[in-house]
Image (cartoon, rainbow, N blue to C red; front, top):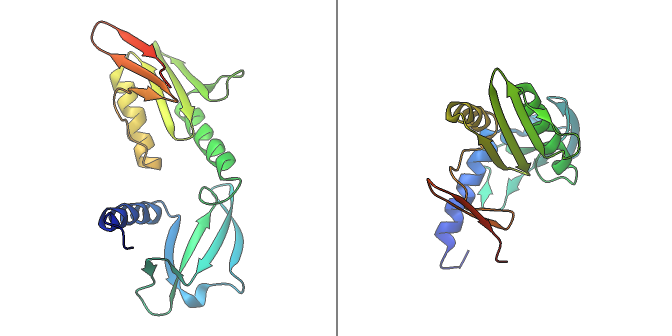
Length: 176
């Protein structure tokens, strides 16, 4: 990379590669474990997955002799990845105790033992509305552990809607 931002791009790419390895999407294996061909269909956690084998990735050659990369493609790089992610995260919220709204499938609500929370999901953007900070903290700790999704605190924009919050009011507007 010849850009003046090459170091920043490389750092961002290294962070992304580390995340892919941490989540089991990308790993290095001995070359002898590669099946004939470059694809293999498998079932991972109930999700159909395609394993793709690569000699190297641009900028990330295999550093160990006789090893190759294997990419577990289901939630990464396939046309059906959006559907698979939605199915995965839907199962997560249901197991956590949320119910999915029948008329708005990206809206979940939790109503148990005096607790009430609403979650709005758009791909991997999550809004959580609840009066119980401990509930929200617990939920995001589990989301972080399972998917690396973190609580970003109060939001100021969501899907083009701008939000201003203080101790007295919440203002919502849209300028774009």
